[in-house]
Length: 527
Image 1: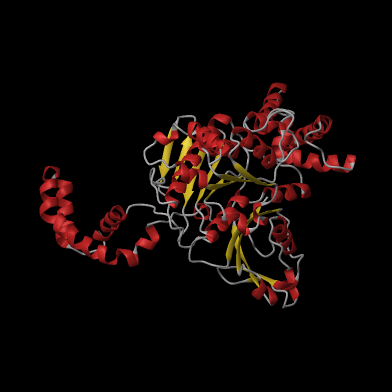
Image 2: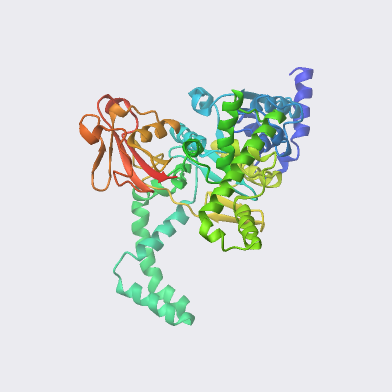
């Protein structure tokens, strides 16, 4: 070993000395490990900092966003002057400053477009994303790659963390003996055993005899049931309860409607709430000035705010007229009219503030650094435990239950028992299906369904897909037929489709062969 190498190792030993005092710690596991962080925002910056300081061998950063001024209050790897630069690139530079021994790869790219080899080299994936579709896609990739994932998110003073262990990930999760006991407790109620049922009744009535009854009546039967469960546990139960958790999609079987659909609906009609006014104002701005407003240019934001304010005042006026017609207005005193207008103003909020333009158009989520620190710390800790387990060492079991909710108002943590869904479209027994929620204007026609599907990322050729009612099999659209079944202008209301009804899209012709999705379950919501 050269003198320089020896000095480098000594410096590392000094840096990580306090970690070595932790029972079960092995710095070699950390130094040889690779963590992927998808999303380099408030959570991602904190998590990356944690692993850089504890001496992880390599970090892979993935983020398609650039730095904005509003990021600087929560994302500690960035500083004034970084605005406009890719988050992943800047974060990589700052992490190298923190720990010169760290290897960092960064990708200013969509997670869906990354080469599979990028995922393959990572031991644990950490999701620090701020939108559902990206979470769902990453969840799907991790399931396919059998990579453990730690997902987290925050909204205002609340946050959550979920540990996701895919099937066949070779990670130990949960205790076999404990799970056998859980199955035994459930199975005992399935038997028509009079002695057992009578004993339970006696226990309820005579609490002071509980221990005696358990020993004399329940335990012998329990041992009998346990013996049977033990014999069949590995074949019948283990696959569903050991070394696997529910995935992210198990918790979100139907993703919320895409914000782009709401925007599209707003353009077709009058704004109906505060956010709609800003979206409409952006369209007016583009028509007037020939380009979209740049949220980093103060003058653009000021002009946009002025246009949005006009839309908001028009909305207040429309609502006033709807609720106070001319004949009613004549009977009101000036004070009552003022009260009506103030109530409407309270309903739709005060006049716009400068920062609201970016928050609304960017679909920004309420966030604060203190909560981000708490949630990111839990994510880092759970990922660290998973990393050690992958290399055969144990510094603590992963969270069980694998989902925790945090309420910062009351300082309360709640671990939630979540269930793996057999009908989960990502990790369950159902293949080739997708659930989609579409927000559409009230006067939409069949053709708009295909337009809305394109807006949310499902580009379907109308001539290759059929639309039906999944309950009574009534046909709404079939390009192989004629008449109303092939009329894209027929209104959804004429077809008696109501808000929150479900329709089914199934492929025809070559789409039957080429499409991975064989059935779209679409929830229609009128706006």
